[in-house]
Image (cartoon, rainbow, N blue to C red; front, side, top):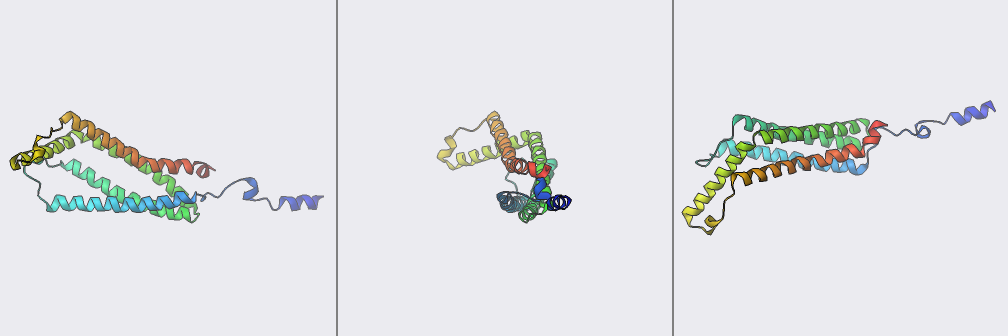
Amino acid sequence: MPDDVQLSMEPMGEAQLGSSPRGDVPPWVAVVSIVIGVLGLLCWGGIGVMSIAANSLVALPEGTLEPSAGAQMFEAAGYIAGVVLGLWLILAGAGAAGGRAWGLMMLRGWAVIRIIMAIIMLSGAFYWLDESVRSIGIAMQAQVDQANAAGSETADMPSLTPSALRVIAIGWVCLQAVAVSIWPLIVLITTRRRGEA
C-alpha cells in the first residue's frame, strides 16, 4: 500500500493542481495585438512626421492662429508616445504568441499605460480646447472669404458658430479617447484570470 500511494502521488504536477502557465494568452489576442501595434506605429509615426514637416516647411496662411508652444509640445509628445506604445504592443504580442510569461505581463502593462495615456491626452485636449476651436474657426472663415472672393456657391453655406464648433470638438475628442481604450480593456478582460492565476 505505501508503494501504491507513493506512485499515485508522484505524477501530480501543475496540470493536476489546476494551475495554468502564466504565459497562456488567447492566440487571437496576441495576433490582433501585433496587428494593432503595427498600425499604431505606422499611423502615429506617419502623422507625427508629416505634422513636424508641415510645421517646419510650410508657412501658415495669413490670419491663421499659430498653436502655442505648449500645445505643440503636447502634440509632439502624443506622437512619440504612440510610436513607443506601438513598438511595445508588437513586442508584447510576439511574446504572448510564443507563450512567454513576459508577453502576458507586457500586454497587461501596455493596456494599463494606454488607458492612462488616453486620460492624459483627453485632459490635454480639453485644456487646449478653446485654442483649437479658435484655430478651426479662423481657418473656416478664411475658406469662406476665399469662396466669397471667387464667387463660389459654397460661399452661401452657413458657417458654424463657436458653440457648435466646441460641441463637435468635444465629441471628437471623447470619441477618440473611447476608441483607443477599447482594445486595452479587451486585453485586460481576456487576460485577467490568467494574469491573476
